[in-house]
Image (cartoon, rainbow, N blue to C red):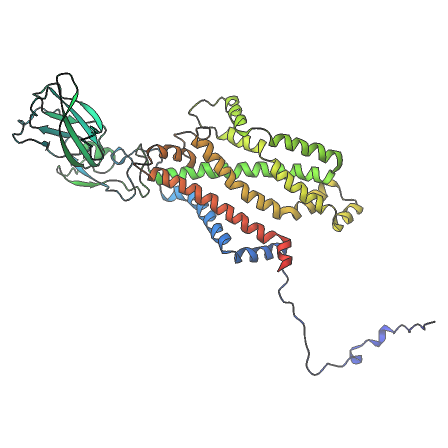
Length: 465
């Protein structure tokens, strides 16, 4: 039988009872400082260069959306008819011309064959004259931006006929735009059909503006009108203009406000609903959990596009009108089951932890347990889900606007701008390039940021290091 050691008297432990320790003293230090969960996640996120670059892009996109219109104060609906579909870096000059007057002093037809230009070719007017073509009963005038193919009989856009063989002149006033233009005059026979006889002239049109137009646009002061032929500088459009002469940079900013508003508000709504729904299902479990998740499976099977159409009809939104509200409602009602499933799985795991059982023994209520213990411990999954949901919503809005089901002109969004730009992508590619680039950069940045957050917030990956 072991003998018990006597319990020492606490009065023995005084300062005199201890002696200082001399010699080498080895102290063990922690290999890394003590960090909280979020501090450790931030350090891991900063080590991911792609995620940090994506974070900077997202911040820059938000600044572009919020502060951009304060810096670039151009009305996105204002039309610059002198610079319609102008590309970035295009010539921004215009020549001051006289107001239009009917062409009455027509010069005599030239003796030598060929098509001649009368005066200066501007976007105000183009006057042509040519020598009579033998055997012609009439003349048809064509215009194109590429060289015509005479052998195939392709000359471009038919502008009209002169009316008789003696009328060897033509004045073009139809939708003139600056740039290289080819004019062709084709001789017609007595039956009104084109013959193989034709004349072609290559002309470079420049922007022309009258004094009154310059004053109305703020380019000149009424009391300081320079002489005709003066070169005026037109307003700057860094990203060019669209097919209606509207500034592309201002419309990209306005489109960012619409696209990011839908892309952020809609995910926030359906993610929050999915968090609450999944938390209740996971915590209660049993039959309630089964019924709730079967309803979520039913919602997943509902066709999104069909409900989008029904909501547009229900809100009284007709063709050509923007359906921002039905789009947000449709996404909120139909896209929450994915978040609910993820949160439910996390809740099922967290509710078996010891600290949850201890809180239950102390009398904690269900609401307290869910919002104080379970939801904070699933914030990593929730943030990652939200980060991936935002680019999905942006792409969904762009797709629906592209097919005419979302945001409709004149309201600008990246999807509706892409829909407008694809119509002239071969001639004016910048009208499609810039909105498509904004969609691609934003979606890629949010996806890479979500991937980096998933790695930074994953406890299992930290345990492997």
